[in-house]
Image (cartoon, rainbow, N blue to C red):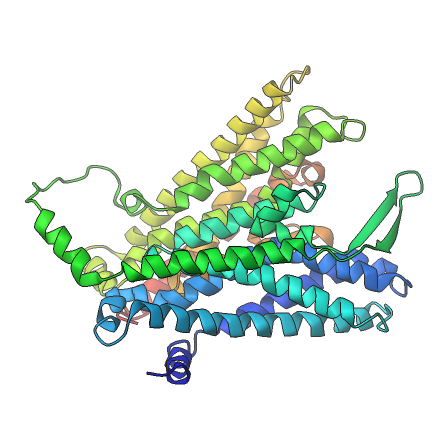
Amino acid sequence: MNICKNLFIETKKQKRRFNFLILVGTILAEIFFIYGNYHTKAGAEDGWLILFYSLPIMNCLFLPVVMAGLASRLMDVEHKGDMLKSLYTFSTPKKIFFTKYIYGTIMILALIALQIMALYKCAHMLDFPTNFPIKYVFILGFNTFATSMTLFTIHMILSFFIKNQAASISVGILGSFIGLFSAFLPVSFFQKLLPWGTFASSLFIGYDWNRETRETFWFLLKPDFSSSLICIGWIIVLIFAALRLLNKAAVEEREARELSNGKSKSIFIHKRPTEILKLKGSPAWIAFFIAPVISAVIGTINYTNNLEILTNGWISLWTQHTLFLSYFFMPIIIGIFVGCIWRVDHTGTNMNLVMTHRKPMQLILSKYVATCFITTLSIIWIIAIFIFSGLIIHMNSPLPSEIISWLLMGTLGAYVICAFQMFVSLVIRNFILPIIIAFLGSMAGLYCIHIKHPYVTPFSLFDIALNQSEARDVNMGRFMIAAILFIAFFLTLSISYLSKSDVRSNE
């Protein structure tokens, strides 16, 4: 089969999967952030410099997750029901991989085209000049394409060779952490070597912030293409690595080795909770342990470098630890765990089997309890890292008495997100989309806090619980009522949906 026919078949596979909406949602989210941060500077003569600086910074946050999601969605069809084994009977691993790789490249080119159009649209919305040199548009597009392709190549390899798509998503989340953190560090050769940091290291806009006047002066830098060239080098290395792995991807030989080495095993009945067992060996645990650690490292470094501003001791350290964790990454971690718990039941005809033995209420509540248990462990892990970090930097003051309320409020706020994601992952029989919804929901929660309506969304409750600059103004009565109502509503909705809807399998 020629490449055009393969691409046509791939397009058919992706029909009604709405991959393009992921790109559109990403662009809308970036415009929302940029407009929300700089609408007060409408009409500024140097406004176009602000846009060319802000867009790569937003890419540091969004695109690692988007590339992971795109690669995972492209491979999700083949991993369901071991479809790859069937495809290998009339095609080769190389054809399958590179057809999807070319399809993803087209999607990335579409994403960059949308970003450039959004750049001009945002300039018009903010009344910024649009007569900037066109060469900077091409430089921005080239740097974005080189970095995005590197990330997409990494995630295509992970999604192709690792059946559990949580591995690719976890790497994407950690990459988003790394990219965002590197954006606030001086550019170094090590930073240029990291694909996730290239969005920031290839910036050609600088700024100088005057602490006394609190004004920012923006200026042009000489474009540096070294980061993008390193990315091209990474792509070449990764493609060669993929070729070697694809050459060894003969399913028949691997199965033959497994059968020849197979031995009869005695049956062992696990006594641990069933829903927890579904997470055994899941890459989601990587995000569980690593994401809070990275957030703590970033927060501790930021705290020690700004002691003249952050003067509230433990409370200031806590705000730095939970800044990105509460707003972005913790909701995504919860979304991953809920998705992993539902993924087993949504595979093949497993749901038919489960529903013959368990009632809808029993199934929903058991999954919810398991998710809440894991979330509680995560909150305790965050508190433990926080205390350990304070001891390392020799905090002289005693631990604040508010730490108990932080723990309780944060746990209850996380339970609300668990209930919401439980319903979303039940209705949307896909692993990636509920995680993207969690990501967008965290931004919606941030916006609701900004407009002084923190009790409107499940995500804003968790944000104000962990962010102590907001928690001081929290009405505990309203917080408790809103949390309980949200939990009861989404659990009832889940039970009702599962009770009245038909079980759908093999989709």
